[in-house]
Length: 138
Image (cartoon, rainbow, N blue to C red):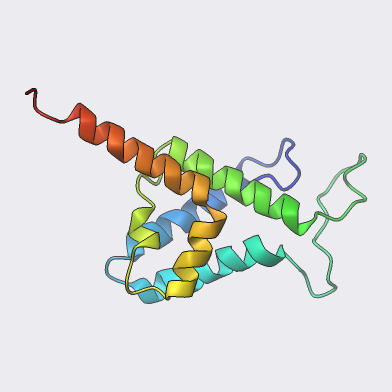
């Protein structure tokens, strides 16, 4: 994901994508793997990426953004956009697997729903469209 909404190294989205796929695929059999990863993702959404000094690590390079710390809101927006991109590209097709899983803590599921409402709504819309397309004619 791109913390500053500008061109970034190509692997940033891929790193978040890999983590999301691990959560998504491990959930049915290993919710104890998904829980801590999801907790970390929601924590990043709530608090940003605080380092030991209290500042977000600065990107390499120069320009007006290089001297300014990244805000928690910018991080949350970037993660939210990356999640929506993964859903739009059907990397993750159904987020209900996560937010409806009874093996995960209810507060954690509620936090996930709060932070990724648009991506969840997009999944629900895709599911409704898919159901309509696969209905037999009357």
